[in-house]
Length: 110
Image (cartoon, rainbow, N blue to C red):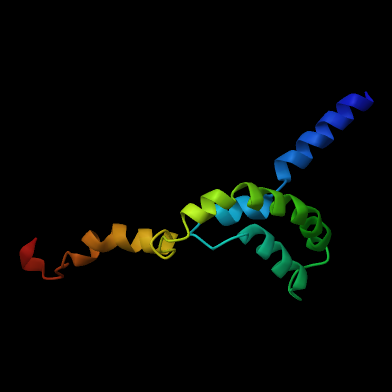
């Protein structure tokens, strides 16, 4: 029974490890060690609740580890423009054809 608890706890810990790092790498390029910087910023912030502080402190070493593993990926993407990968830029680019089409409110055109 103790081994099952240990396996479940280990799986839960591995599933949540490096959470800030994974979230930071899904968006636009934010430089080197973005997950670690996000954890440190949350720990320094007065707006972080007392419930999140231990979770962020627990996530910090795992985010540093994942950021270190992803360092070659960050290096390869360091020359890319980060704004081009942002969700806002992709949405605006996708909406350009819709915005370029004039919409007439004149009832005679129907």
